[in-house]
Amino acid sequence: AKPQELAPREQAAVQAAKCFAMGTVPLPLDLFNPKGGSLALGGPLDKDGRLLIRSHIMLTDIHDGRKKVYLDTGGKKLQLKIGVMFGGHTRFSTASQLSFEVQPSGGKGKTSVKPAESWTTPHGWERVFVLGGDASQFWLSFHHSHRERSESACVHFGMAMEVHPVDDVPRMMSCAESPSSPQEIFPSSIEIGQSDSTTKPFRFAKSLSWTRQEQGGFLTRTKFTLATPSYVSVEVGFNFFLSHGEMDIIQDQASASSGSVVQGEMDSVHSPGHIINAHVIVGKVLPPGNYILRVADDHYPGQVAGDSGCFPFTLEFRVVPEAAAPTVVSVRPHPSVPVPRGVDLVMTLRFSEAPQGSLEDVVSAISFGGVQAATGGSVNAMSEKYATSKRHSTVQASTEEDHLVWVIGWSSQVLADLSTATLKIGSLRSNRTNKTFQFNPPKYTVVNAPDGSPWKGGAMAKGAGSRGSSPLQR
Figure 1 (cartoon, rainbow, N blue to C red):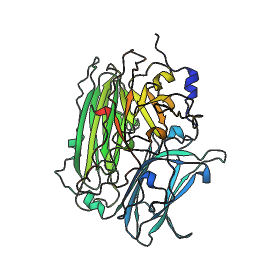
Figure 2: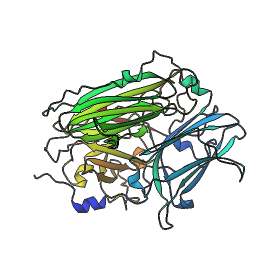
Figure 3: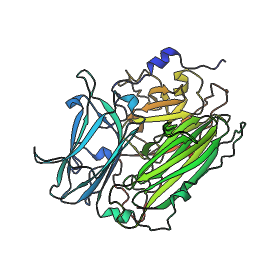
Figure 4: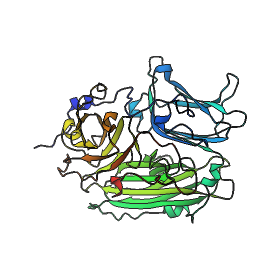
């Protein structure tokens, strides 16, 4: 049979809605009371003032895109870091302008708390605040501004928020193990050894290592060469609270004004109590040529009080040549991140080649936790169309980048009775080569609610190691 792609009618049917809410949770009323609505996010603050939230958030047209969250420090001096990520989420929203303020409670006349540091990237921003002193009660204010009254205030974004007592910071940066230099983790070059006929994927990795850094952080440059068109995937893991990790790929010998070939986006990795709880990732098909991978870390003023501190990092560098067997090159969310049971799950799968077949053919080959996906309508009109069958679930689906990227939305009903779930893909063939896709099924852990207890320095708590297995690392 002749290989098939999605028909134009099917493409139109899977375009994302203007205010796509699947897989998101609303911001809570507060972050310190168990009844304040933060349990689904990993809250509230524990008795010592620690908290880690990693979730997908939705602001709606209700209150014109405004939301205030109450935080009581209980008289403790706390440090709060927040990161907002639009990369991968802007397709669900009309704009990416989101303002954030920390305001002492108590009425007008009190000025907002100034951030100790603020970073902005093409895919979002991060800010650090110190809370305490004259106030112990604060409002965390979010607002999605829009220029015209008729424009929707709806916005969908990824959010990481980590809170610690300020006394945690020196302990988290202590050099408990023999530290490495950044250049030992991110070398000056990586020899891929490709030719124009290479068919074997390449992998270079560095496990958890501690880098000794001064206040100014670091910037490394790693050269690599591609002899054939290849999908390049890089993951740099770090601790979100301690580091502002950035990464991009540029062409070697490029002018300063030419910019990045691809810019990294931050996402979650591992369980909340793991030392490495975030990573910045890139994934793109690059033509033959000479490239430089740039990795950087930065710190807020006064973070490194002594001569230096130690910061954890990992590296995963993969190259899949065009002539390699067709495969699924990435799956998000990362399988090591626990999946909350009461929230719809949106998965993004990237294929090395476009799969052949209709929308129904591709989606019906995918199963999660033994439940087979089935089509039932577009993402614009599917909110009431979840199947009731135990073994089948109607999903929302959309495609991007010429059908290389598939976004599959699973109803929370699928997760209701699961404690673990494996993502499987049946017999799918490449639309270009007609070869069957290779895929190592990743296993996810399903939990009632995220554990909001972050690593606080020293040894990791028992059970805080990496959960799940990634098809990318096999």
